[in-house]
Image (cartoon, rainbow, N blue to C red; front, side):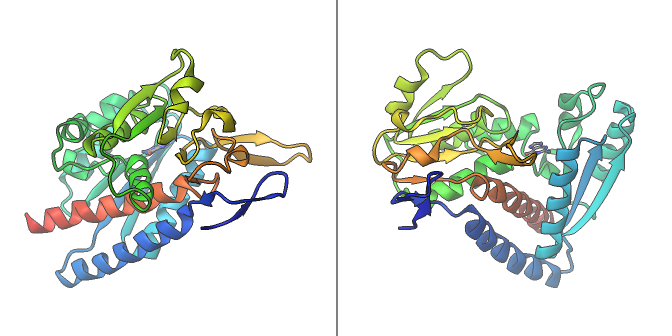
Length: 298
Ligand code: GUN
């Protein structure tokens, strides 16, 4: 069991899930598979499109490109001005769709407000949609098919699978109904036969619902929302929240949705940062490789 310091500096006995270590393991496996594919004459390649100058998006894209380099995946970054129109993005997606040397296409969100994210996602070929956001991949996820699965939910399941072998009948509560995390992770938990409740901003008596949960996935983007007394002893808590807040000395800090300093009665919790975040990028690379392998296998 890992031990970690609480905010008060008191040692707590809860298992702190090490997302960085797990992500590094996944990257290692990906690297080995990339080398094997290169021996077959295929170099996996990811195209990343960044439109506009959102600072957080720039950081995320930089991290994704750096991870590609670590695993041997070729990355090509396309930067479009904030003034780029929808046609420009759609033309680029169309060109990348038809380029046989590109296996994955990622359009970083959010897009500038004049561009419809749905229209852009719908334009990406489903077999190159490494984000798993295309309606075909969403459909395959809900029918148990062989699509590409959104990266953060996939990463969450890899962390949970390290702790739980049999999900059947477990109560899982997902906080947040986003297309990127809440809905797809609920589908994956359902696939493993957990009993899944999706909650959202209008849900009544959220603490009472969370208290029933064996698994809590908090993806509300509400810093410190989930308190220790909401969490059942022995529950596994996955914190997807990542909000940058100002702290007194003029610096900023990343804060999750869960008060894990109040959760030493939980079985395991993910920290912020260093929990789910690194898994998202590791799973993006794994998805790119999967897309390249499937293309090579025909
Ligand atoms: N912006 C925030 N999260 C994501 C993600 O998972 N994929 C993309 N493309 N953009 C994002």
